[in-house]
Amino acid sequence: MSELAHLRLSDIDSDRDLLLVRGGKGAKDRWTLYARAAAAAVNAYLAQARPRIWLFPGERPDRPCNVRSIQKMVTDAGRRAGIARPISPHTLRHTFATLLLEAGTDVRVIQVLLGQPASRPP
Image 1 (cartoon, one colour):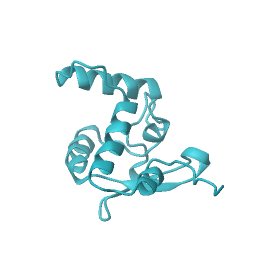
Image 2 (image 1 turned 120 degrees about the vertical axis):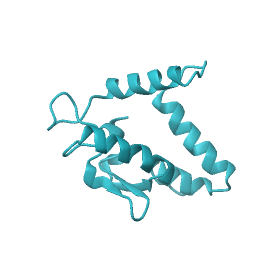
Image 3 (image 1 turned 180 degrees about the vertical axis):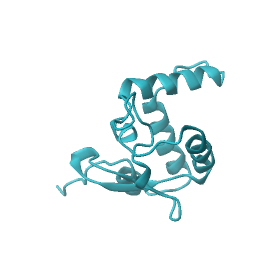
Image 4 (image 1 turned 90 degrees about the vertical axis):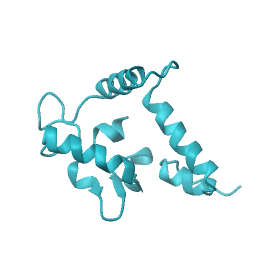
């Protein structure tokens, strides 16, 4: 959730359908997928909210939103969508990984996209 809260507008590469995650797990930067389906919603949000630095600014525009705000937004969105089961940002992470796995994506590629550290050989 911290990775999401700290996304800057400049971290979106729409041309290549990628997001730059700065200082993720292991304090490393990585690129991950930016779904075209999400782009339309993000563009509509950008047109309305007009953030300047952070994709999701906090109460002060020069600071990112806090993690608790993200948790609440995701939970509320799940409730509004009529999903009976509690939804959290971690649920979305698991869903992303499951969809990639079911589409035949290599497990190691999924791990990299999720920011898992490289496993060491035995």
